Length: 505
Image (tube, rainbow, N blue to C red; front, top):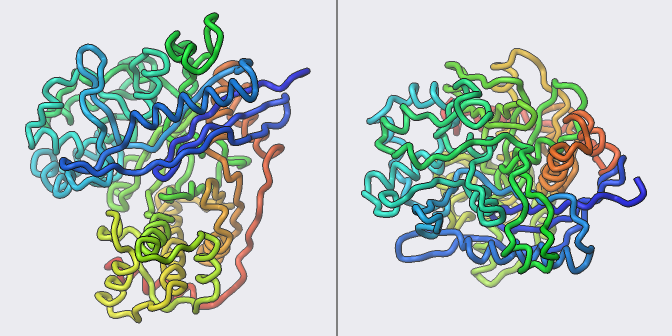
């Protein structure tokens, strides 16, 4: 291949977004950051929102910078974001209101309200999705209960990446991997019922909760070429009027794209996508919807190439991020490396927390909440900053062990190695703690798995690679991996027993 193919991947996370240029020479993929921008909640009198208009401006800025620095020769553009949040459009295709942030308090009590209307078991049977108050289903239910005028005038429901894809191309559809995160989707409906994607909207569940079903659009599978850029976008970002590159729906859920780039061989591996959230699971050919997966609150989210991500959310590095923000508000600024070094020097196993404790979900004084959890559970209360961060990291690693044990129990086989991808792999302490906690080999990398998976799906959509296995071979050829072996440190079994105690097991 005389010149590398250029692909533009937009990856929007809860803390930041970036435009990444992917260059593929036929064997290796090289990623470089073109534009990075902050993301976070905006507080208004009616609640916590996302600033989608600023994010839209940043997306166009990233595209303009790419054109300016690397020319117009873009083979494709793809975009992924977090899950569950959504926008509503009116009959003219205009945004009805600013989308809410999943940590907004409007979903408080909505799980219980939903179960009063539709039994918990029936919701899981129809969706196979874990129960979290942040899910789109409970956000929509809160609007029904409040008789939101936005819901009354809505004509189209789009998840966050689908909204940006609509503004890029004019095509209003929902991509499969992100649609499954909503808990409004039935993965076992016949594929022909919705736009060729597997499954379809769970109409009977939605009707049981009085959520209007007409707002849910066509579902398309990962790797769908949506359309060319709209002429207005082409002009604004500095492309020639002849038209811009095709816009492709990769896996529009960031974890879906990240798992596509897991550099695994074979199928008996576990994966962790590590960042603000940690998500741990296995890649399967079909959803697992049974009493065990319901009891352990596992989820069946859409993957690429006909797969499902059978997994469970874990609170992840949100705990560390929120501690850092709290201390910054108090006038003490630390880098993540500073905090990790302080944690490495702290004594191990002073106290054990469950990172998924409900009080840890919302923004606020996380150090105080961690101390309060330890006090309430009759454990030593960590005092130093290093001890607090150590407690958080050990809690995450121990919860990984719990999830891995449940995965293997449900699937009936051993999963090894454990691949960790995403920004959280830069925390080498957490990676080593994970290997020690689970007692098996951990392989980390790539850091930019989401962007890599985004580009791989663009390449597959346009015929430049033929399969997921070929794409993962490209990842292995392109990015550095690090292996962590268990050190044999004692104390993990006792700490794990304490985790089970504080979890009430």
